[in-house]
Length: 128
Image (cartoon, rainbow, N blue to C red; front, side, top):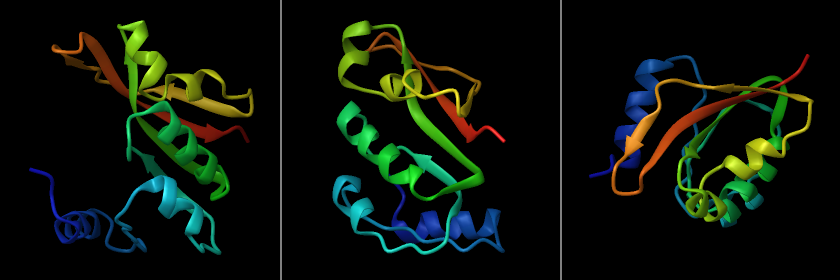
């Protein structure tokens, strides 16, 4: 069972007591475009949906919130089933990034047996 919003907030606040943390529940295709954030964000974790369409939207909105030291971590970079990768995961976005970004494939890779794919996190930063 997924954690509640309050449980997630409590865990994040424990790990990062000085951080300003805002959790927003909802479909990121709708919620991200309606955000009114004046300051740039230090850390962004993209794992709202798994479709290429949703991840592409999340990345498009996240880029507007980045500064030169922002770290963006994508979940769901797949290796394995090429048909799955056409519809799901962040592969297309990561592979289309310009040379303005540093890309780091994080370990470990997890294996999802019923899908026959490996999945891992990918860290993105602007080149300085």
